[in-house]
Amino acid sequence: MEQERLSAPEYSDVIVAGGGLAGLTLALQLKQRMPSLSITVVERRKHPVPHGAHKVGESSVEIGAHYFEKILGLKHHLDQAQLKKFGFRFFFSDGRSDLHNVTELGASRVLSTPSYQLDRGIFENELARLAQEKGVRFIDGAVIRSVELGDSRQDHHVVWEVNGQTCRATARWLCDASGRAGLVKRKLGLAELNDHDANAVWFRIAERIDVNDWSTDEQWLDRCNPRSRWLSTNHLVGEGYWAWLIPLASGSHSVGIVGDAKLHPIEQINTFDKAMVWLGKHQPQLFAALDTRRDKLQDFAFFKRFSYGCKKVFSGADRWALTGEAGLFLDPFYSPGSDFIAISNSYITELIAIDQAGGATALMADIYEQIYFSLYQNMLTLYTDQYRIFGDPEVMPVKVLWDYTYYWGIMCQLFFQNKLIDVSCMARMRSRLAAIQVINVEMQLFLRAWNLVSAKRNPPQMLDQASLPWFAQLNKELRDDLSDEQFVARIDQQLLQLQCLAAEIVVVSRRDYPTLDASALVGLLDHEVFARAQGRSVQFLFGAAA
Image (cartoon, rainbow, N blue to C red; front, side, top):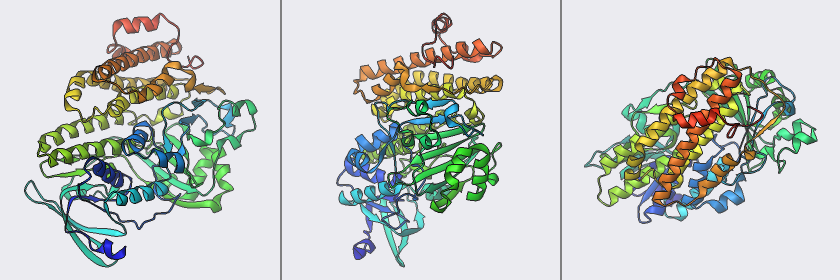
């Protein structure tokens, strides 16, 4: 085994720099599409990696889960070795020691389309095993010393060191999955800031943390069937921040704090002791749960200004590509990390397949990159300057409904139906997608304005997403297998749904706050849709919130 690893081949069709989540899933997808392709993955960490406290990014949502389960065929592993997620759950609990007496947002039952909580150590060990089983050359414990990029006529050269031995290899394609190290990004000066200035700290505790243990109120406990709130990605939210609780199959629990840098500077939380002091003020019940488990602390880490963009991620002419955090990163809220890995890997796989067939790789890379950046920019609006809303029990539940509807109704439809790589389909969808992009931007601005005048009422109630028939149906329909005609009809249906939801949000919010200016948003809505919303009772929003 050792000798085999050191005798790396001189040439591979593809070298993947980085064998974490992004790199290993890319290698598996490439092998699935093109079994004869020779692939070398060079990974810095020695395998097997530890369970529990390995890497952050444990919560998956529907696109990432679909990618793992259906496209990569990992359903058996997910069902047997990982935890099925009980959706997102939000508690407006800043400064409170009575979780059962605050507004809770979430589903009372598990919805139809699955997502998972991933123990990254367990998952990446399995990905590495599968990759090698399928013929991928996996070199672990290796440090890449240099990367020399080729051009349209020349191969790429990569030099790494493993166990004191220097190895050299060439490849037609170089795929950078090196995470924030960003080997290609740094070499080519592709780093790009965005306007989202937020920080995060996280740590793992070697024991389960169950929010149900924080109350003995049987009526509150019975709101969920099953009583398994611990399986949710639990968000404890306040103005300018959110704290996460994510269970791991190894028995550990992931805890994180994410905050707007202006409201919660990283200097307040960048050590475990500082984070505990901060939690004592903002989330006292979580502080109490952790205080008795200090001896169970497994790790602690933080990122300052974690969100960033990238000037270029795909070069079809020169045959290199960036995936995962080697390219760009949005925000851990709504857990989009594995989604964007799934999307970028699918584009890269398609580009390499086109290249193998002698096709127009440069042209397709430019088109795919344009779509990819558009998705990134559209999703970025959900986070930028929106953290003040997070602690608002009136506005935030509405924002979550809107953001889910956009994600399930548009983003997921494009990925589940495999349309993102269908250039002709994306061209036909352009005007529709542009229209909803404009409405989404205005909606995010409107929610921010509403938050400024909101009374922020926080009654002891559960806003049950599963009780909204349209919402549960939207989730269920993700798994439909649609023809091209049905897909176009589905997108038109979702655009109308977003128009109706936007109209109802305006009408409901202005009942309590009649001076709230909604003219820019209303100007984008169909007149008949808005007129109907003014003349009917609540159809899409929570009755209690209305």
